[in-house]
Image 1 (cartoon, rainbow, N blue to C red):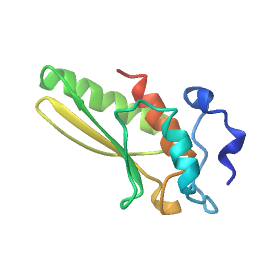
Image 2 (image 1 turned 90 degrees about the horizontal axis):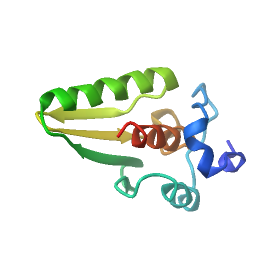
Image 3 (image 1 turned 30 degrees about the vertical axis):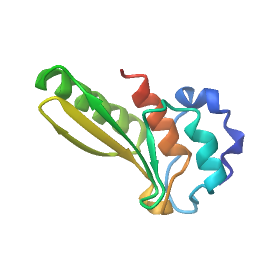
Image 4 (image 1 turned 90 degrees about the vertical axis):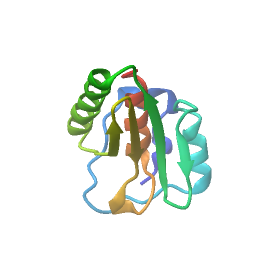
Length: 117
Protein backbone atom coordinates (compact mmCIF):
# COMPACT_ATOMS: atom_id res chain seq x y z
CA UNK A 1 0.00 0.00 0.00
CA UNK A 2 1.35 3.40 -0.88
CA UNK A 3 0.68 5.76 1.99
CA UNK A 4 2.18 8.71 0.14
CA UNK A 5 -1.26 9.47 -1.27
CA UNK A 6 -2.22 10.74 2.19
CA UNK A 7 -1.16 14.22 3.18
CA UNK A 8 0.19 14.09 6.73
CA UNK A 9 -1.79 17.14 7.83
CA UNK A 10 -5.00 15.41 6.82
CA UNK A 11 -4.54 12.35 9.05
CA UNK A 12 -7.30 13.47 11.40
CA UNK A 13 -9.68 13.94 8.47
CA UNK A 14 -9.37 10.49 6.90
CA UNK A 15 -10.69 7.09 7.97
CA UNK A 16 -8.68 3.92 8.42
CA UNK A 17 -8.47 1.58 5.48
CA UNK A 18 -9.78 -1.98 5.98
CA UNK A 19 -7.05 -4.49 6.81
CA UNK A 20 -8.28 -7.29 4.59
CA UNK A 21 -4.99 -8.65 3.35
CA UNK A 22 -2.37 -7.04 1.21
CA UNK A 23 -1.58 -4.21 3.61
CA UNK A 24 2.18 -3.86 3.98
CA UNK A 25 4.08 -2.39 6.90
CA UNK A 26 5.73 0.98 6.33
CA UNK A 27 9.43 1.30 5.69
CA UNK A 28 11.51 3.06 8.37
CA UNK A 29 11.75 6.35 6.44
CA UNK A 30 7.99 6.49 6.07
CA UNK A 31 7.46 5.73 9.78
CA UNK A 32 9.81 8.55 10.75
CA UNK A 33 8.06 10.91 8.36
CA UNK A 34 4.65 10.15 9.86
CA UNK A 35 5.99 10.43 13.41
CA UNK A 36 6.30 14.16 12.77
CA UNK A 37 2.53 14.29 12.14
CA UNK A 38 1.51 13.11 15.60
CA UNK A 39 2.16 14.49 19.06
CA UNK A 40 5.83 14.16 20.07
CA UNK A 41 4.71 12.24 23.18
CA UNK A 42 4.16 9.19 20.95
CA UNK A 43 7.15 6.88 21.05
CA UNK A 44 8.19 4.67 18.16
CA UNK A 45 9.30 1.25 19.37
CA UNK A 46 11.18 -0.21 16.44
CA UNK A 47 11.77 -3.63 18.00
CA UNK A 48 8.02 -4.09 18.59
CA UNK A 49 6.94 -2.21 15.45
CA UNK A 50 4.48 0.03 17.29
CA UNK A 51 3.80 3.57 18.46
CA UNK A 52 2.85 4.11 22.09
CA UNK A 53 1.82 7.02 24.28
CA UNK A 54 1.13 7.36 28.00
CA UNK A 55 -1.53 9.69 29.38
CA UNK A 56 -2.00 10.94 32.95
CA UNK A 57 -5.31 12.00 34.48
CA UNK A 58 -6.54 13.58 37.70
CA UNK A 59 -8.60 10.60 38.82
CA UNK A 60 -10.15 7.28 37.82
CA UNK A 61 -13.33 8.84 36.37
CA UNK A 62 -11.32 11.00 33.93
CA UNK A 63 -9.18 7.99 33.02
CA UNK A 64 -12.26 5.88 32.28
CA UNK A 65 -13.84 8.68 30.23
CA UNK A 66 -10.69 8.75 28.08
CA UNK A 67 -10.50 4.93 27.79
CA UNK A 68 -14.13 4.81 26.64
CA UNK A 69 -13.51 7.61 24.12
CA UNK A 70 -10.53 5.68 22.71
CA UNK A 71 -12.67 2.52 22.50
CA UNK A 72 -15.41 4.39 20.64
CA UNK A 73 -12.89 5.95 18.25
CA UNK A 74 -11.29 2.55 17.60
CA UNK A 75 -14.67 0.99 16.79
CA UNK A 76 -15.49 3.86 14.41
CA UNK A 77 -12.16 3.41 12.63
CA UNK A 78 -12.14 -0.40 12.68
CA UNK A 79 -8.59 -0.29 14.06
CA UNK A 80 -8.07 -1.26 17.67
CA UNK A 81 -5.12 -0.45 19.94
CA UNK A 82 -3.75 -2.27 22.93
CA UNK A 83 -4.83 -0.24 25.95
CA UNK A 84 -3.74 -0.56 29.56
CA UNK A 85 -4.94 1.70 32.35
CA UNK A 86 -5.22 2.20 36.07
CA UNK A 87 -6.36 4.80 38.58
CA UNK A 88 -4.89 7.89 36.86
CA UNK A 89 -3.06 6.64 33.76
CA UNK A 90 -3.66 5.09 30.36
CA UNK A 91 -1.19 3.69 27.82
CA UNK A 92 -2.22 3.31 24.20
CA UNK A 93 -0.26 1.25 21.64
CA UNK A 94 -0.94 1.03 17.93
CA UNK A 95 0.39 -1.46 15.40
CA UNK A 96 -1.17 -3.35 12.51
CA UNK A 97 -0.75 -7.00 13.45
CA UNK A 98 -1.86 -8.24 10.03
CA UNK A 99 0.86 -6.20 8.31
CA UNK A 100 3.51 -7.07 10.87
CA UNK A 101 4.27 -3.44 11.64
CA UNK A 102 3.02 0.09 11.30
CA UNK A 103 0.62 1.26 8.59
CA UNK A 104 -1.19 4.48 7.84
CA UNK A 105 -4.03 3.26 10.08
CA UNK A 106 -1.81 3.47 13.15
CA UNK A 107 -0.96 7.09 12.46
CA UNK A 108 -4.55 8.02 11.60
CA UNK A 109 -5.70 6.63 14.94
CA UNK A 110 -2.80 8.13 16.90
CA UNK A 111 -3.66 11.56 15.45
CA UNK A 112 -7.34 11.09 16.33
CA UNK A 113 -6.39 10.07 19.89
CA UNK A 114 -4.28 13.25 20.10
CA UNK A 115 -7.43 15.21 19.36
CA UNK A 116 -9.31 13.60 22.27
CA UNK A 117 -7.10 15.42 24.76
